[in-house]
Image (cartoon, rainbow, N blue to C red; front, side, top):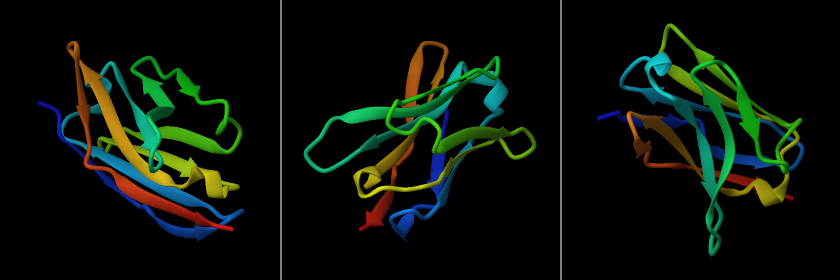
Length: 115
């Protein structure tokens, strides 16, 4: 079972930046995919960004060019660097990973962007 722990959420003004981290209980190279979803109040959980084992990435159209996902090999950590934040980025951000046909989730971290 893969355990994921997010950190780095908080309150920021529009136009600001935040960095989220997701610490995995095993090497991120052993995971098929690792990344982030987000869920705003009253809305469905949507994919934000993901990183595959081969190093390729995908981003939601709404964040492409503003968010960057990367991996720290030594720390088994995946980071989501968020820049030019907008109020519509406000949500709970969940780290997820896919491994051997199963999906795992972190507990989530709140990101609030004030206008």
